[in-house]
Amino acid sequence: MFHDRARIYVEGGRGGDGVVSFRREAHVPRGGPDGGDGGRGGDVVLVADPSRRDLASMRVSAHHRAGRGGHGRGANRHGARGEDLVVPVPPGTTIEGLERESFDLVEPGQRAVVAAGGLGGHGNRRFADSTRQAPRFAEKGLAGRSGWIELRLRLLADAGLVGLPNAGKSSLLARITRAAPKVGDYPFTTVSPVLGTLDDGDRQLVIADIPGLIEGAAEGAGLGHEFLAHVERCRMLIHLVALGPGTDPDADHAVVRGELAAHGAGLERLPELTVLSKSDLLPAPELERVLADWRRRHPGSEPLAVSAATGAGIDDLVAAIFRDAAAAPEPGTAPGAPGFEAEHRLYRPAGADGFDVALDEDGVYEVRGRGVEMLVGRHDLANPEALAYLERRLREIGVVKALRDAGFEAGDEVRIGDHLFDLE
Image (cartoon, rainbow, N blue to C red; front, side, top):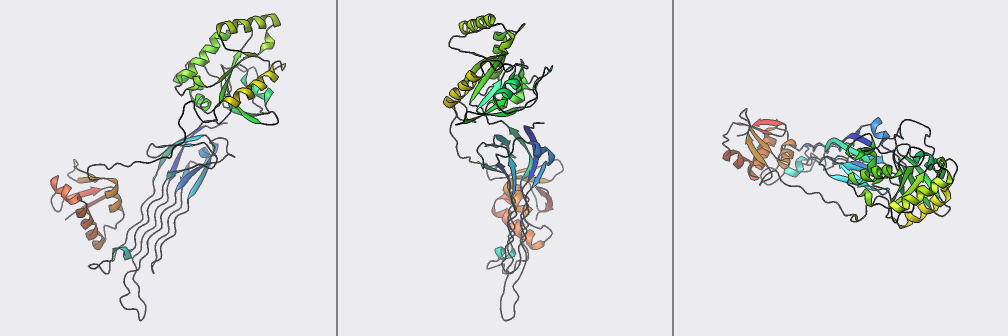
C-alpha cells in the first residue's frame, strides 16, 4: 500500500549535565573548581533520500529520538555532543514542524532539523568569580524539543495522468511505461498513485497515475482531495477522457477541470495535454465526428485519440508528452512561484520583558516565559547554593520586581514551568 501521510513523534536529545568538581593535586595550591560542561543533545534531522518512495517506514517506527549529550567531568572536560538521528524521507515530502513551521524537501540531500537537541549544563567552573570562589552547584542539561509532527508526500513527476475513475489511466501507463498497475473492469478506481518511466533513448520522464477524481474531490469527497496534492508537483497534466457508448466527454472533462481549479494550488494553470482514451470502442467515422466536435467546442485544443488496448495513437502521444514536457516548468515548481529562499525563524518574547506573571486560582504566582523556564530548569532547587544563585538571577532580569508589582510577598509560592517553590 502506498503511504503519502504520516504522523511521527520526534525528540531531540537531552543535554548533558555539568559537573561539580574541584582540582585536588599534591603541590597545587588553590586548585579551585574544574567541573566541565555537559554536551549538547543530538538533533532529529529529516533528509530527502531518492531511494525512498513513500512514508511507509514512518508508520512502522513512529518514534524518533536523538542521542543524549555526555555529562561533564572534572579537569575541565566537557561532555560529548549527542549523536544526531538522521531519518530518510522521499523527495517531495513536506513537513509541518513543532512550531507550525513548514519545510519542503524537494532536492535529494536537503535536510530539515525538526527537533533540536537540548543545551548542555554548565559545570561549576563557570560560576566561579571573585565573591564565589568555590561554587558547589552546576547546571543540569535541558530536554530537547519534542512532539508530534505531520509529514505529507507530494509526488515529484514530469507528468500526471488525471481523469475520472475508469478513464483508462492505469492501462495507458502500463502501455507507455514499464509500470505494472492493476488493471481490470473494477467498480472502483486506483487507490494509490503509481509511477512509471517513459524513455526515448535520450531522455527519461516520470509519469504518475493519479487516482481518479470524482465530483466534489476538492471538498474532500472520495479520496480525490488527498491525491490532488500529488498533481501540484507535476510539470504538466495528461487529462484522459474516456470515449465509448453512453459517455459524455465534455461533461467528464469539465468535472475534472473544476476539481483542479477548486483545489486552489494553481493546478488549472499547468500545461495540459487532452487525450481521448478507449478510441477502439468507437467506429472510425464516429471517432472523427467526436474529434471534430471537440475542436469546435474547445478552440485551440488539439486532442489525441488513443487506445491502450490496440496501441492506436500511442506513438503520437509519447512524442507529444516529450514535446510539451520540455517546455514545462521543473517538477515541484508552480507557475509563477518564487525561487527558493533561505528560511529564517523568528522568536518573539511572551511579554515586554520576555515573560508574563499571573496569579492563578490557587493563589500561586505563575511566571511564563521560555527563557525563564529554561533558567529554572537548569538548576537543582534542592541545593541551597543553586537556589540562592537562581534568586539573584531572577532579581537581575526583573522577575522579582514583576512579582512584587503583581502583589507577591516573601514566602508566597511561585510556579515556573514544572517547578513550584517558595521565593524569599
